[in-house]
Image 1 (cartoon, helix red, strand yellow):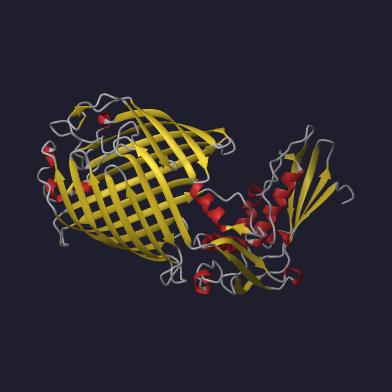
Image 2: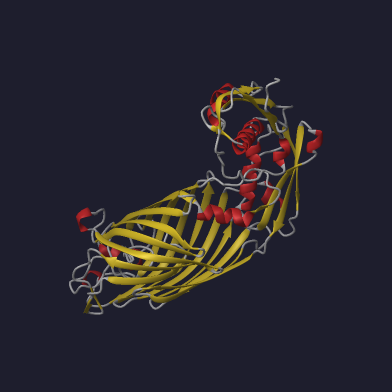
Length: 538
């Protein structure tokens, strides 16, 4: 090939370091790719070879730059490595046609087929080897797959016990057919704590605190103690979770909880516990089954006439939760020589694409207890990032219904639906948006529907702005949602990035007020509410 103008070789050095591809820079007089020829990829399965032209960034008609060449070579090597060729190399050559057009030849040297060999672990002092090995996505003897190493790195990082997780292929220069790997971790402190302040109309100032130990006995068992104190609420909760119960997908949890709500016109207390079993079916889908028992007590004002018949007694209920959480693909490439597990976990939390959850619960019936009901609730959230991911379009839909098997007394007060506060329908105060008693006081309902759309934009280095619009309501009867009854609000907000987390302030204005609303016997004429909080509303 005497007319070859330039050759780029990409090979197995990607095992050690693969930097993020920089932004593409198109020269003033670009050279256009006239044709792309693929050679040496016959070792791949037929369907993979057929899809290969579309999988590579190198395509006919695009402007050819060094960045495009590098990205094309790295992607080709990745495909070969994911099909059992750990030492694959790819050469990219240009054959100029004229001053503005070129032919590109992508030639692969797959090398020998490789299989995973022994797996060694280093760096862990408090965490048992078994906890790490249970999260391996490959085993000795399996066909080598680069994606299995990436998946293993993510699984280990998700435990939350390590500052960094590194997986390195050993003896790479000798290119052994049996490929040994070394997993090196750096342990983080198992103690975690969080302290937050918030303000919501009706709830006033609230303090939230949480302290956790993520590795109590050395096998990824965690204990969490958390509580909340505000003008109307006092909550304390102690939980124990075994996140690796005989299998990495299985988790067991025990929880004890005490909650009091001391509102303007009612007082309610719940004290009890819960046992739960969870299973992580895939990285995105999980289910949890639970059984809870609690003692419920309530005391309501005479103004809340629909609630005067509520009973005190024992709540015994089973529940099933399903969650699907789609996360944005990591921007970092495979094989970074040192990856921060905390940073990766933060990225997963901060860059979701879509989450959906479903909660089904039944109390009483064939189980002992004072209360008898069936409840279903769903929550769907979607996040779209645009303009180099600087602007976020966030949306949320939440709906639910609780159906008493007998009369209203079969549903305890804490299970009834209310809207308002710092996280939904922000132009109303906490517990303000719901069906009203004859005297105009909120009494809660048995059906709920709320939807939110929010745009979040950067303003300064540590300051972001937001604009939101919300619609929602609560209905007195189960399985009842009338769109004509929806209430609406709109408002701006500010978000401040601080070393202690994201501080949020939102101003909500009622576009369609709740007529007849009275609090403490006083008509509510103000259509504005202000809320402060830690973190985004959703």
